[in-house]
Length: 431
Ligand SMILES: *Cc1c(COP(=O)(O)O)cnc(C)c1O
Image (cartoon, rainbow, N blue to C red):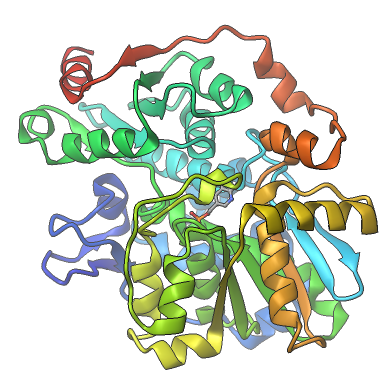
């Protein structure tokens, strides 16, 4: 299996090369050359198949030239060692809890899968790989945790000082070993700009192997398709048309769901729910894609003004808006609507959602106004304690802190404070 650049101006590469490079030399995102559907019998009997076997069958075609079957099986065993339960909330509404991993963010699976692949590809290599990543919160923790202790890989995480939650900061800054946290005096956009500058700085890239761990990397993006298969397996017995609502920021998660659909998963419709960062809902309405600066919201992991993976979605549908509209609906919601949804769900079922999950719920309910007979699953992408302030303010309850989080709260923060790109560069050159 080869991967090509969506800018069509770079050579095709193997999975291994795509993972190490992150982005193609022509700045395009890599995309698999072919998506071969799994047999219908696979989906007919999916309830009988273990999660590990589902994962192996779904991922195998993309990686088989570069990862042996045994190695793939062992990577998947390491990555998928927690549950992905579908919890019913209403007659035709359920949530897929994606927060049972080590950092309680749905990014754990992609980050761990990428870390294991990169670690495997670095075995026997003399030159270390440095993973450089900017985070607005949850990516950093998942990446730090996934890469902790992986030989041959160093991780440098940039985060905006004072703009991530206490829990998120602890998850980034307390691990040590091969993980370094850089605290930037600026915004998330400033962090992202520094990372982009570093990738284009030949003075750096001639001296070190730099890669990113954002969802543009195929190893972080593709394994997310498993969530949809695991959820389908649990909901299939409902015997109704299943639809997924995905709270979306960079649109990597929902795009992976669409790859699961190409693999033959019998799900016809997806809902991309966003906060007021509504570039995609606007595109779906008007046919014009107009990126905007991001706006701060309470669902801050989705504060994205130019979603990097949306290009992959357009490509999956040959850039045909009409075809895409048959498979995708997209709606945006304000913070007030999000808080009201959190309250409504809590009162009606006692269930506590985080603000991102609540946006997913709203998107689902909106679609179901016209399609009441569907069975809708919205994704709960983070545990509510990851967004404790909002949850406490909105619901007047304090959810108990789970052990994974308690463990990091008492540790000591270590970070390197910087305010300019030159400081980052000199750190990278001298470390
Ligand atoms: C990253 C993230 C999202 C958005 O996922 P995308 O794949 O970027 O669309 C949603 N919710 C939470 C909690 C996240 O961390």
